[in-house]
Image (cartoon, rainbow, N blue to C red; front, top):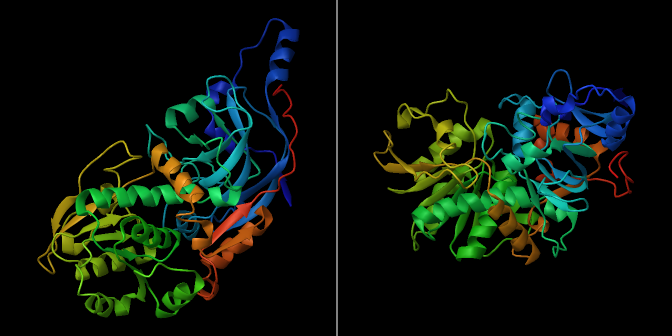
Length: 420
């Protein structure tokens, strides 16, 4: 494994916090440096120079600012966004990916909102600057140790403390952030559509969680649509499903809706497929959704993309109307030029702390669990190979898991030098 002296996570902290005025007393300078935490050597998964793959390297020990929060990662999960960045279908400047993660605080300065020994969940989208996202535009959590400037963490509300009474394991908690994003989506849809049936185009982690959660929380039906018949069949056999969830491929969707015509047509829909399939997926939902249906655009679109059936509509901008549960905008009505129907579109970025805490509660009460999502547990060293398998055309359709979760070793890191 290659050793690198450069620390990409330093860009997470305010660079000014790393520059100290020279002291006229050499002894005082030594005392200041002794109080600064020194992060030991640890493993990091970096993007390769060609940006399309990953490799494990060893990060050399580094002295970090005493304004930094240092976190030992306990678990981290691969998201479809990570794969989109690596495949080139989505831009991303981070050299270290990963935004779904759980860790334990090893060092935290005063007034940082967290304490040493606490478990924390990463909430990656910055509260005040939502264009700044851990693991996308700034370096992420696919590493043994992660640190972030405390003032930035507080302003951005980037860390959510796990309730002290929570007994969930670290792997289970890795589901908290994606589950919270699903809860945000369902909240927006219920505000506009009530407890109608739900149509979902996308059969990854988000689609699976949305289908199971919607039916368990509302009692209404859900239809989960996969692109291929083979994947839909495998997904149906791979995990337990509520009785009122139907799984089908795109080609069979019209028949499945017709077979269930005794009930109301789905007036709520979620688009949560890959970026490559987003255009096809949106058109499919517009084809089958009834007049006045609402579609949540969880799938991303390039900023310049326009859907001809909707006119000059910036689909990517719709996802910026609701940010972390703070900015709120109702679904926008658009006329579908092909069918003549009025379709409402809504979207969101990030998720609020309340959604993450609600997700933890649902996981604790076993309303939903990691067992609901076909998954594979990995070490950090296994992550590059697993991601390569998820990206490769010849293997991704035969992969017998949807979610990849890294479980970090539990050995004690000991006291950080200078942490006291």
